[in-house]
Image (cartoon, rainbow, N blue to C red):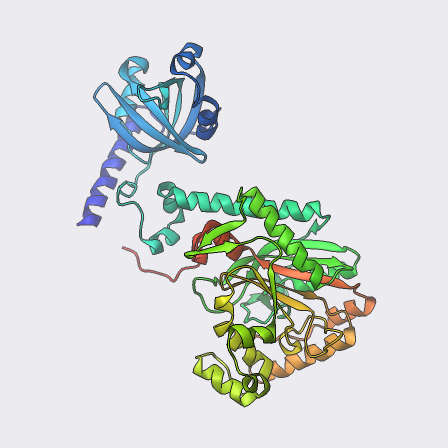
Length: 498
């Protein structure tokens, strides 16, 4: 019944379209140039007195989509929406030509029109444009969802994001905030003398992170390639080449599970700075996020997320990986020291582990289950084992761990960073160990990158590098608990549609 009613509405709109054409109106007119945006007009004139505004007789020219329409016979109101906000339009027979008033009477909610007129205020004090001329710009053939029901079906909102943006202002605000966050990050990096670069999306090898790749094929070179899981080794090649501060904000692709925190393609910022170590990056990350909070006008450094208050006040907490397992996860020392006990315990926690995995990797799975969900305020976890950090530098005092941290906020990993391994012999040995893991069936282990070893042999200066998950940071700072709510077009399973 609902579909039948919608089909009737669509058919009526198509009939109106044909009527417009017959009357000489182009329903898809191009050439109207607005001179004002809705929010700018409100900012400039909302406080102006009604009488003074009418005396000034200010002409304006706006364009937008009709979101509300009330007709009273010889006059009526419309609510227009452009990308900045809403503007009320008043149309009356005496102020429009006969043809334009006929056009006004044929308009539907969803149509995109241009309006020329003068500003005034209604009896209730609402800033309004008195229309002198109306131009049809685009006829909308499909009705928008009912105002009071809106577009609540989340899956439909993800599939038809264009419709979601039209009717749900919260979605638009989230995406505008996302743009502001990314622009703020970019400004901060440039202010600190970093150079923005772009590196390949198509890789010959799987390197730079522990992840399962997407495969593709290049016909021109008869070559199997992978969508990149991380830009790391290319960015470090640039540091070898003398670009001592580089960053990239771009997409990574990982052929893994999908949930509230994971999407197969996601946005990361990776950056590398010569002559610094991972301790510098912890302070730098605090400064970066504080800068973004300032741009978002979050003065008290406290945000609400998933029902909890998160305090971004500096300094942020720092804990050791093994201490986190003991103190937060309440894991016994015999599990930390015995692989078979760790394996049994991880299986009880329903983690995907097997006896071929290194002990440290099993502990990382236990950490994921018991420690990460309890790290609510920003927390740097340091002291990760070498076995799960194939590209990080060994700690000078304890060669079994690396100079690495991961940043967790509200139970989510937000960043991963370390002092970069620049010893070509050590790096070669770790690549070979990763190859052994691949032979045992670990699809996430890195491949051997001979050219990267060659680059290290020319000399990578002491370098610190970090990757920050942009989508998850946006989730936090906009209060969205699903990654799909901060991505304009999240990947969805195919669905048969009528």
